[in-house]
Picture 1 (cartoon, rainbow, N blue to C red):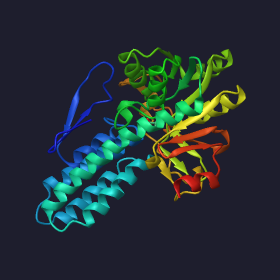
Picture 2: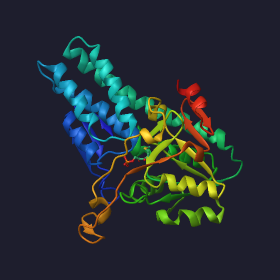
Picture 3: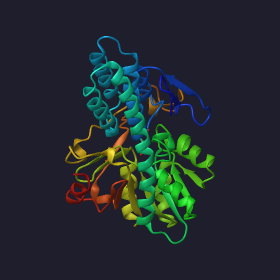
Length: 336
Ligand code: MRU
């Protein structure tokens, strides 16, 4: 994303990799629509965009600025339900805005806070990559498998799980990344494979159903994924299909690592059952780019996230540190 002070430009992720088209959002409503329609997606990127959306709301507000900014925050909060980074960022923006005494002050401070949220996310990604590399402790190149897109597109830059993969590559410790294509929205094939190929990182794309066969071959040492919300006991909501990978990893004795900034941790929820899971329209499964691939009108179940229980996770990596074999006590001692 590109912030210009008076507008936010978002690379339209729905068109990648075929087309690199930037959409300009000039107000909070346009940002909310971009989040709803998946122009921008990925938990941290959604939070950062929403923060810029609030900054834009202040720029356009008039005499009743407090009501208008408040409404913009509510509209942004209603854009998607699962990634807690959205609500985390909006809470920071709301707190900032409530302490402003004039519209001029709000316009300045909200823009500066959004930029800070963006910069801190990038820096968290870099720190997480260091923690993860130290934890993995590889002495020779390893292969990993990842799911969905957790790269620069999904974050403030660099990436969460993909940041770890980038860092392995930078240290010449990466043999190969297997990227699940990630049905139905294909974030793996359209976005992850695109990011990795552009950066010259060796990637092999696979259908989601091939993951078991890949892990059975014994080459992959870690499954590395991101997260959309992590609860107080270490349960993790992430892109649909993550839970099946965790089961497969445990069966094949492959490590399962979740990489996410602390803005993805929601200590107010006791466990994964409390996480609101977004269900999207059935047409995302029945069609690809408008082309039918299923009988018209067939009933579809399309939850876009699932919950991986903490018991299947070997390690959660955040910028604040790592939680090995997550438990309530360890989560509490790191995140309060
Ligand atoms: O529906 P999306 O594309 O917004 O899904 C979010 C994700 O990309 C992931 O689940 C991801 O692993 C966490 S975001 C780094």
